[in-house]
Length: 413
Image 1: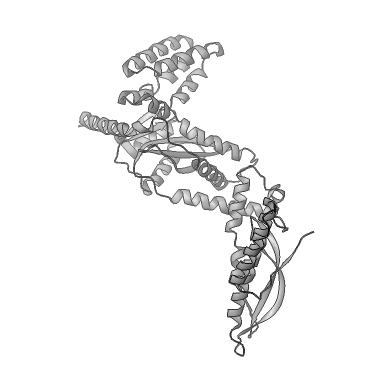
Image 2: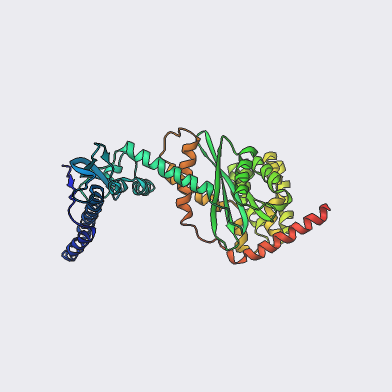
């Protein structure tokens, strides 16, 4: 049975806090649940004191009162992500209009509820089951699935806005761009790596495919938020032509492109008979593992010649952008750092969190919904990011990128 709490208004906030403290001292033997219950009761007592002081101020001095008490009304406040039923006091002005109680309204604000709803849903609690999953610390009444959906929408809209407005770090060394599909929608995400080795979700953009228009819009947004296109930068991409075209248009010669080896290997092997895939997967990995990039390129060309007789499609796939799979080796990058930045695995790992949290969505209503859910999952994933392997060698990568840019400018001069 739903319990309704009566909010009394006759004691000061100080007296209320003293009483709450005394009760806390009396319950040393209580269980954790009992302490949580008491904490909620203490919160209601604090609300009682705040209302009492506010009502006293609104009523005014005796004999000069500008308002009067007008009974109580059913209401609620928010505690621990759920509604708790209370009897709120009412106050009317002499002219008859009811006066709002700011203390009561603050306890009704949905900011905490949005955060509580977001925490539960990010832990795979559906809107239908939320009512039974929220804390049982107080005998309030749960939040219905329609209300939870509204709070989740507000929470994810706020997270999306925060992501799209925060500045881009100034000391970026590498930029990874990749796309993920949700039914008929495509979300292109940019992840940056700073010189200290920290990873940041920089932004995301929604479209129907990962075409150059969508990617260019994403990069344009990053530029507006502080991305410096005049500094040398390593850009890690898969084989999408739209991605490559947009990077060329925005960065020009300032960007050194590293093609994702995992995507390249997958594209080649998918066009081979299953009986040969294991053999050529090993040979590709061995070629990319060579320290000397010239030797690595010769070995890859040798593999391409063999594939020409087996599968012309696999041969063309390997030769397309072959040199860009060796960009980091040309710079003489440390092996540990090369493994971290020779593929889009850093961003794919973040996408795995998106899959975990969006996997149960059956119907994507529109692009805004896709962006909200993606942003929320990516921000949650970002909080668990660690520095990349080989991060201590990133300053050397920065110097190597600057030297490469100078050489490129001399050749084109």
